[in-house]
Length: 352
Image 1: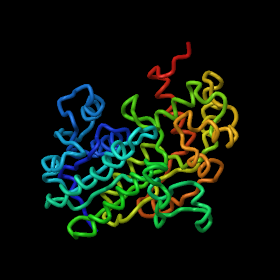
Image 2: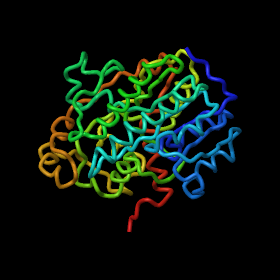
Image 3: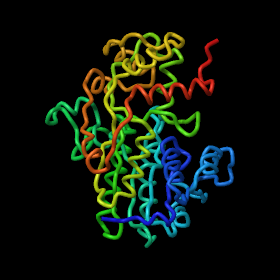
Image 4: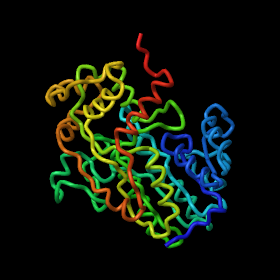
C-alpha cells in the first residue's frame, strides 16, 4: 500500500498524446507539478495545448528531453518523483512493420521506463496504461469464458505479430511490466486497461485511431454501411480520472478494466444521427460480414480479424474499477457527441 506525496513532482511519458493530455490536465488541476519528458522540449507548437492548460491551472509543468527507445533518457525527468505514469505507446492499426512500429516502442519503451524506475530511489508507484487489448485478443475468445465476459484475470492469448499486432504489442508490454515489477519490492505497479477511448482531447487533432474512426463516421467513408464490430467504449476524461485515482488511492492494486458500455459502429452512428440529423453521411445500415471479409485486404484489414471479431458480443466486467477506484462512467451518448462536435468545431469535415 503506497501513499503518494502530492507535493512531489509526478512524471508522465507520452505527455503530448491523446489520453496523456487529459491525464496531465487532471494532475495540473489538482495543483501538482508534472514532469513531462518529450522528444522535442523546445517545440512550442507541439506543446501549445499542454501549455494552454498549465497557464489556467494551479499546477505547473516542466519539460525534459527523452525518447522511448533511448535507454536512460527518463532518468532526469524522474528524479524526485514518487509516482510515474507510463502512457507512451503507439495506437495505430495500419502499419507496414508491426515489430518496428508497434512492438518495439511498446516493449522496449516499457523496459526503458521501468529501468529508470529501478534506478530512481524516490519512486513508489508506477501506473501503466495498458489496454483491454491485453485482456481480450479477439471477440470470439469471449465465448470460452464464464458468461462470455472477461475480467482482470483474463489475458489475451490469441494475438500475434501477424494477427492484430497492436493487441499483441499491448499484451507483451504489460506482461513485461509485471515481470520487472516482481523482481523488486520498492515500487508497486497499478495497471489501467481501458476499452476503446473516445471523447474530446485537449488537442483538436490527433494521430490516435480514435480520431480516425470518428472522422470516418462523418466523412462518408462508411456511408455504404458500418462494419459489424462491437467494442467497449469509454470517455477519455473518465480514463484520466481512473489514472489519477490509480496513482493516489493507496489500496489500488493490479489491473483495472475501464469501460462505460459496449457499442457497435452502427450504434455509434445512430447516436450521432439522433443529434446531428442528416448533416453528415452517417452509415444507416450494417454491412454483411461476408462482404467485409471479401474486401478486407483492399482496405488494409486482415480477413482473420474480420472472421474472429465481427458479429460477436463484447462483454467485460468493469465492477473492480467501480469498487476499488470509485469510478462512475459518462454515458456513450454524451462523449461520442462531444467528440464529434470537437471535430466539427475544428473544420475536420469538408462538406463541399
